[in-house]
Length: 350
Image 1 (spheres, rainbow, N blue to C red):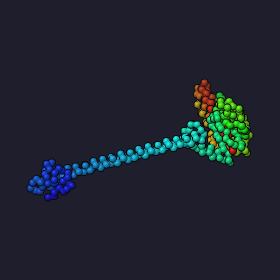
Image 2 (cartoon, rainbow, N blue to C red):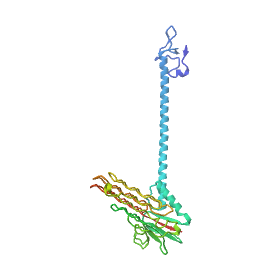
Image 3 (cartoon, one colour):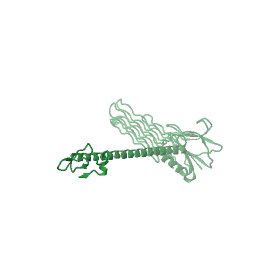
Image 4 (cartoon, rainbow, N blue to C red):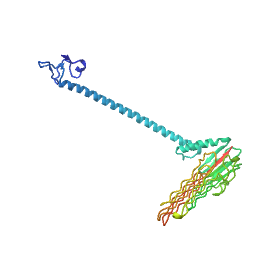
């Protein structure tokens, strides 16, 4: 006979020799009852084993559940920490952009960060400081300097009917700021010129010191052997392409003009519905070479009755002209003209 050991005895109340009323085991051939002994084989023994193993499985399952919950909490904490870190980085990128250019328009985008880095690099080339203006600034304090030049590009014209808009032109010229303590910088929106004025307390009303040439003109002289721009005609933005018209036997659209550093937008092809012209390529305002963007492509014409023409492409930044709209056919609607790109102003001094 094998007695309950100490571990098994702990399964039941009382000591190990106390008969357990829940188990009546037959021991040996005589069939005598021996509640204090384990039989060699019995249904009750199997039940005890199942009870023990079931408890172990439950304990393991509970433990695993706790582990999974703990791991989940760790991942949640890590994700929240990562999200907080990402938000902090984004806010720092916004502050980076806003701190350099002023204002509060920064979004923290990769393009803005790249732009700021380019501008900082640009600002220290050859001992010059370059201040870049992409939006109106009505009271910019004039720094101490021995020479100063203004580089201006006006806003490109939007397309007009089927005709592409003219470029915003280019000017690079020395300016004399003797006795002037504050400047008013006005950036040309689509179809408008850019200006540098003396600030006088009321926006855009002071004496004009420099302004971008009329749209589509050849531009002003370069400064310092082309350091801040290419030859005057090469520094120009591109004008927009013309839209197509006249159906299948008509005149197809034309692409936007290239600039020195950007490719003109592709023309829209004629078709059942005219295809849209593509936007002109843009040039970063932080580029060392100061030049304009390319023109938008003209919209394609429709060749099926009652179908519409394509839209003109947008002018490339800065100063690119918008593409002309494509014509509908047989009563179909014309497309929309492409918008001109806004201009920019740089002040370069040392």
